[in-house]
Amino acid sequence: MNANRDLVEDIRDYWSRRAETFDLAFGHRIAPGAEAAAWSQPMRAHLPAPPAHVLELACGTGEVTRLVHDLGHEVTALDFSEAMLTVARAKHAGKARLRFLHADAGQTMEPDARYDAILCRHLVWTLVDPAAAFADWFRILRPGGRLLIYDGDWSRPKPSGRWAAWLLTLWDRYSPDPHYDGATGEAHATIMQRLPFGDGLSAARLAPMLEAAGFAGVRVLPHTPIARAQRRTNGLRNALRTRVYDRFIMVAEKPAG
Image 1 (tube, helix red, strand yellow):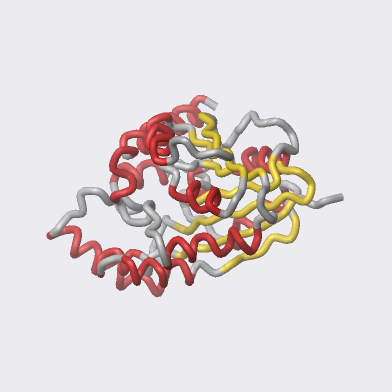
Image 2: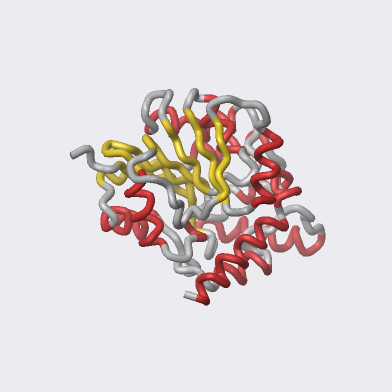
């Protein structure tokens, strides 16, 4: 338990330190236009019709928050980093249908059956107790509620992405990116080594864990449309980054019975 607590604090400190410049790093800010539309499409297709009460876990600086809120939902955006929430609150100041919540995404402490939908981006790989988190998410969803996950395997390049990873390593050696601290960053890698999914997160690994928590109708959706949109709105270095890791989208539901 103490080891888990120490890890949670290390994760919180790591992302809190990055809060002010987080949107400058590739993969966090969502550009308007084609990229925003690509991220929004799974929300349009798989979240309940608006206005639904949606919980966004690990909202960070509020980029995904903007998209789901713009669809007309009532949004609760949760994060355990006050530094991240400070940025998100400033970004969305004055908006109706939106509240921010300082809490742990792995143990929300929210009431039973409160939400029509839950979504998260790049959160699951950081969970220190995935089974407990999934049970908590199942508990706070209403019967028939939806879970939408955007994530990936950040532990190693996919086979087809090794060439892009090699080029990026060479590029970063001679021209470091001051804002990017992805899976190749030392602090990021040190945290990953201590996580349950530190050896890799895949849709095939995640699906049975969600089913064990009670979720049904687990489906994998392609991440390719998002990657294509990112390549149209970013330079060559970031276009290469879209090709390194295996990213996926997953949707599941809490049975209505």
